[in-house]
Image (cartoon, rainbow, N blue to C red; front, side, top):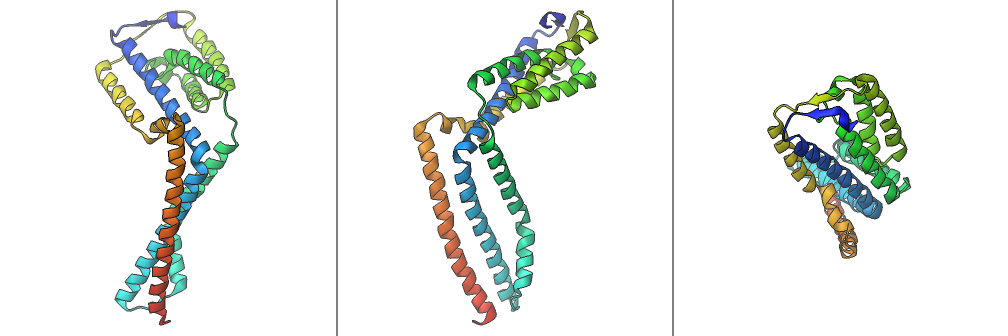
Length: 256
């Protein structure tokens, strides 16, 4: 298929390589995040759950202080309803984190040899039908559907799906082009190159990608475990202090 494409832009090769590099970095960042969750997910959740307790108690404290300032009595049912409402988003986020953590922990680890093969197949396919490279893809619903399937398979390290997609891509392109060459010309390619370069910088500075520097070092891994343990203990201690403060405010409101 590579021989079917003629390119006009002199910067096309650089643009193509930058796009492939960006996608590779996104893929790596995703996998770094997965591995981080495998190693630290339980501790992250444990600390976050304790943090939620602190946030909730702080909200209860604020509510009780407002009642004291207005000289109003405490209605526990109204307080509970108020807290339930404002904490819903945070607790829903926690539930989503628990679900993601469990799914990742229960998923199989993909062998490195399969990951490498997936990367090679993706690179071949991206050079053929990446929507930012080949305008035919964006104009062809069947190719766009295949590209979406390829992107998902690449992200999730699904070798079977990406192999099947490659067969279907070859079939569709053969039916469409019949072996004829097509000319690709990327408009405003200089601006697009600059945009992809910015995206690459953003990915490398992202939290997910920076997990790399923790995962590649046993010392860093031990340090991360220690940090998460300390976070949990700090939130636990803070929650205890807040509970005492809250109880004092409730005593004032109820006259106890």
